[in-house]
Image 1 (cartoon, helix red, strand yellow):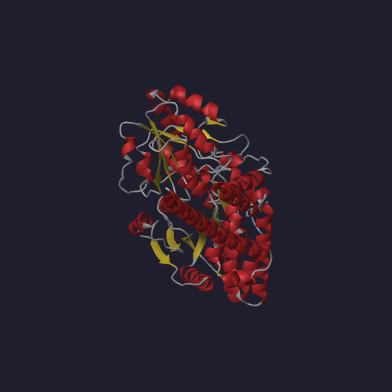
Image 2 (cartoon, rainbow, N blue to C red):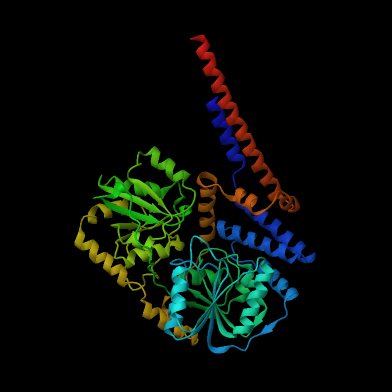
Length: 531
């Protein structure tokens, strides 16, 4: 019975596997529905669909353009049909900072705000999506301590009403420049800033590796490395004259250290962190790398901090008997303190986290950079641009052999960690660079190295589909979470069909599980009677 059930489960998994063509077809279904909503003047619904279409385009990287001129123009059309165009005659020293997230120690909010404060700018800070978990405690404290800052939160509940609220704030405050710190699906900001003229809009390109909305509202795109620079002009179609590279530095938060698990006491700690999807890909090569590192010495413990579906990771830990040596500690608000209490850092794969690596470097922690040959998304050389030869490994054996050679050499590791810290841009250099960019200059033009990124999109999409289909299924559930059954029934095409198949598959799995449980129960009873 159990074997039959496993066979049937495998068949169900194969039938329901998500493919790139499914994503593309579903996306087109959404685009067609958006077009119909606009035609029917259901603008709020159209913006909701644009939001979701952008989320899946960002999450699965299946669009080779990394942007969609149709969505950009739909938003522009919605803006024109709902709001009169506004021409802002801005005050020279007043700057708007529009923040979708407002997360302390995440993204680039604090780096840019501190730079603007150092430059003596009058700051109008607008937060779109207040969050209870990733609060803005540090951000607010810094702004409140600065005498020339005004803070707003958008309080309305619909996309259109929030866009109107934002437009009214800008009309009242009259900034001459706007820094946009947006989510890839930020329909509110895109709708509002399409209606405003006269403001120079600086797009802070947080997600340089994936899709985002906002091409139409970008006068200057602030990249942090040459990979994003190349993707923006080669794929998104942003003119080179609009691109500037400005590397950033990490922020240390003020949360007190919550400690590490008891298993780490008197042990050497190897650490990594980020969203769990960043370590699920290419047959779990990152997890196998960790396994090989731990085999070097029984006194090594690996700790991973991050959020997401950890089922595949827990299974790997159990199968390889690593329960007390491979430890998950979840999402940590005190991540800066955590990184000050570890011994070695390994970058994640298939997706490397630049900010987490920087916090490790700022703590003078030796970092072992790992990726695959020519996977340009993981190239962090521009983030550590002062280091002439950033040591990186593209095979498990090479990294493990290097680790064996140096992991007990305290003097070398200390000097290596210190060198990494010194290889990053300083806060003062960041502020000076920002000031030059505001004056129309291009201070980090020397980092703008042209190279072909044509292969990146296919590789990235394949990694994400592998994660979806083998380790971390979330696509269909995200559809069900986002849409009601009535919503799904109104969307034509394969999206509706596959979502219904997904629901039916889970009904069948529940039925099979119940059948197996009942069969076991009756077999036990029969065995008792016979014995």
